[in-house]
Length: 466
Image 1 (cartoon, helix red, strand yellow):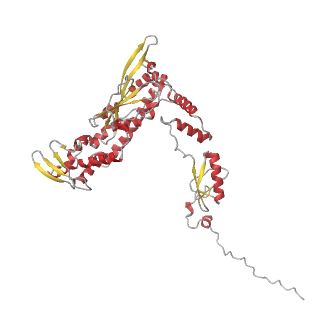
Image 2 (tube, helix red, strand yellow; image 1 turned 180 degrees about the vertical axis):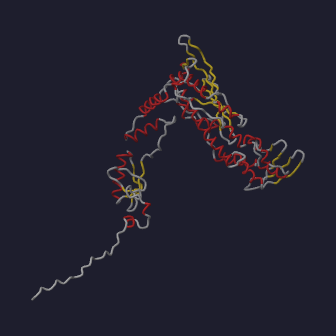
């Protein structure tokens, strides 16, 4: 009996995998932890998208040709600006805009005609004439702030709301005339002082600077500003007034304190009267909030004086180390101080009288902080010079200056009806002439830029006083 041979069974084994499956992140960026890459958004590397045509910082391109095409596409579709090539090589391609891109224009009163022209060019790519930009800006200001005539009529109602929601605020009126036919008063002067500024003035330095500035309107109006200086060498606007003063200019001229306020309000001088009052309120509130926060930081740091007082006192203390003092009278605590000679300057003699709190250099009297000569004499008589710093430099005084809070005004629907009607004075309209009106006064000798010789002479004079 024969039987068929059984089939030979071969041992077939499944081939083993010699490659271990690796995570995607390990294959792509093995040197970077996987959790640090955002693959769906591709934030690790930015590649140019031709469909969007936008450029971004750190963007990558395949080659130089793609870069050139991308810049051309972006300049036409988005930037709308011309450019020119400043450098081109195999490894670098550099371009510069023909007109530098201005920063984002904030909505503020200083927004001018040149900004209108540039904004239209950025959005449309076209240059509009100066006259069209002027009319556009004029219409926009009237939409936002109203006309001069409507602003004057609104002013009594706004001032009433200002006094109502901020008790203690002072508003004084002086009318030029009364019109029986219309029952309206013609505006002459309006004076206002915010209540927090009145409360804070008693902690400021005992100096008031009054200065006037012209308003850039079609009427001859002026704005007078009374400002005081706090213990940190900052300005506290105490009083405001708008008037037509018949050509008289009241105030202390050429003071840095007044000129600083003029610069802050330069953009607001083109606006109607009520808008000017609103801007003075908004900016004063901003000053109070910022400086009150700074005063709390000073208290938390354990400061005794303001930042300005610390800076001046320490600066003069370092100078006093090299001075030489000669005592004269212990009862009056008087002495003479000779400064150190350096670079052709120095060896100047100054007289200090501690009991009178004065020095011949005048700095102690001017700033209320013992100068370097006074500090040297105080050290010679074993007197604490820090105790002679004026009280308005104390941190508590600085804090009290801005401790009074402003209260926000309710919407116009909640305002009370005005006590009288007010109209503008048409007799003080500026005569029209071709071209735009002058906005800057003619410079005189106090506005001339100092020459190098004059600067050097002034430096020598200041050094001789030290």
